Image (cartoon, rainbow, N blue to C red; front, side, top):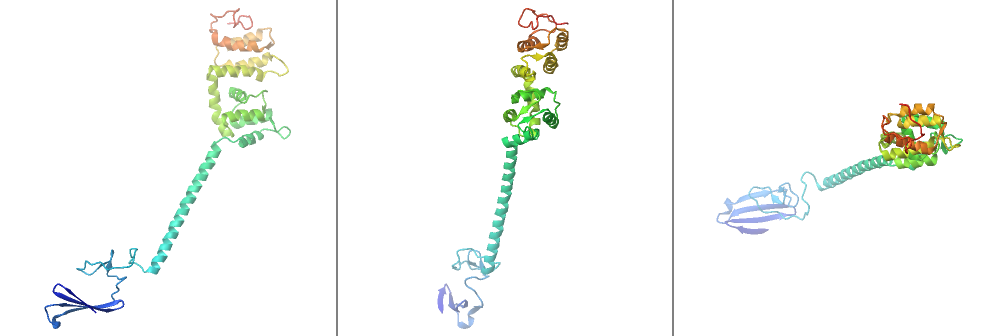
Length: 305
């Protein structure tokens, strides 16, 4: 039993383990006027009469009750249930993290897959080439394969863009692409699928608008189209190639075509072929600046006009 004098009150504490009986008496009164308060089932450590922070819930009490707990108490459940809830929360958080990691992993995999498809693959490029070759000659795309390839990319074989593509590949024979030429050209274009090749067609056409590039393509066309058994190009092939290359942009192309038909020439050599381009670029449509003895006197004959 403990007696404590607080102001005019004498407070007596008597209790056993876990319970206390408190008697409060005014020091200047008799025992018969003592006010007695009996508190039963008062738990001093974990009690529902405690507020957060360890303060008593009884009105007028501002004294914190000492407690050995270092963690704030959860008054909604006992320690056993609290531990189970904590474990459940940890499991939920762990599952959420795993789900998020899996989601991020799938997004990364999709991104990598898309990046791989966008990036050039030599393996895919060669696999595409094999679709247009035969078992007898897997290293060469021939006329049949060329026709199927043109159909797949939506271009007629006679379209000038096919000549530009052949120039990009450095193809040596009209109507044929070797595996080496295919890989060289499509690597420079970064194309390994039909869709990517189709996406480059406008770019290939645009090269024809550059004078230097066009000149290179024009000169290439001579060796590409001529019969390799002959040093010169036959007239029929020359007229077809000139129409393909110059027909849309040279006003005198039709007149020159007529001139070739009426001439005694049966072939065109490479110097004459190159001079035709210079002629088309420098001579006015009315031939007012044409000099038969000049560099553009191609065949030393006056064109019909």
